[in-house]
Amino acid sequence: MIISYLLILCSTVPIIIFLFGLMDHRHWKTLGRYFIAGGAVALVVFGIAAAMNLHYWQKYHFSFFPIWEEIKIMCWVTGGIFALIFIISALAGVLTNKSIASYASTLGKLTVVFGVFIGSMLMIFIFIMPAGEKYIYSSAIDRAKTSFEEMEKKAAPDDAVAAVLAESGQHCYGKSSSCRDDDYENLVFIKNMHDKEMLAQVEVAFFDRNDKVIETIKSGIIHLNPNEAVPLVTKEEVKHNSAWRRWTNRTDDRPYYIQYRYRFKER
Image (cartoon, rainbow, N blue to C red; front, side, top):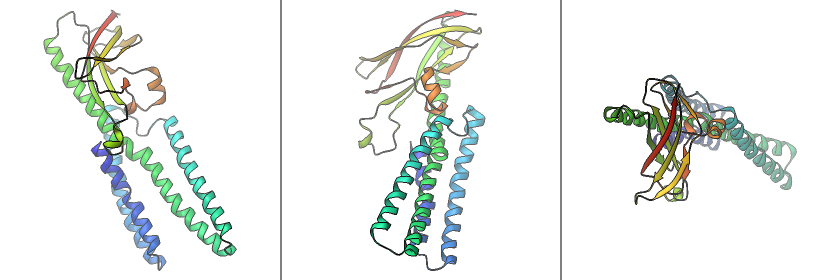
């Protein structure tokens, strides 16, 4: 999560510069300097995020932006926050009995300030956070690939399907203490070890450090191309989450290893 933290932290710098500009606003030229400085920082931060998103799109085929359903939720949340702040500010202005000119000026400034803040939040959710999340998910893909390469060296001819636990973690943006109650998001990859297409069904058991079963899941019928490796995720995950936010399951305790069995039919 370090990459995500750094990107989010850097993306808040233009907002801070903008707020300082408003507090130090003596002349439009002074405010303009803050705008230029904030814009330059934003250009660098979003340029880095754009380069990362482009890299993950080319190498891992992740879409540049989250799916529309996620964007829509983010728009509703940020829009709701903005509307609430606007209404509270408007009511506060009415209750203070200010003149119409003073009231309109204050409300206009607050609208600009909170508009920039909410807009920046939306850009962070849509553009910045996915870049860090893609880093975590792509690292899991690379680990799975390395594990499968090692398994292929030791595999018997009748080993048709392999599975690996590529990622397990609490992917939250708070402090470590506030993440204690978060579920562990686990990602399992399965691979067709043969050179023929197949239909496979896999049952996976997740074990904790004391060798106790945390949870057992059973997949549906999965189509696998020759030597293809895919994440083991449900149709609901695919429907409601972007590719880098799809997990095999979520558990209260952290799984340390898996055991699996399967059945298959080659085509």
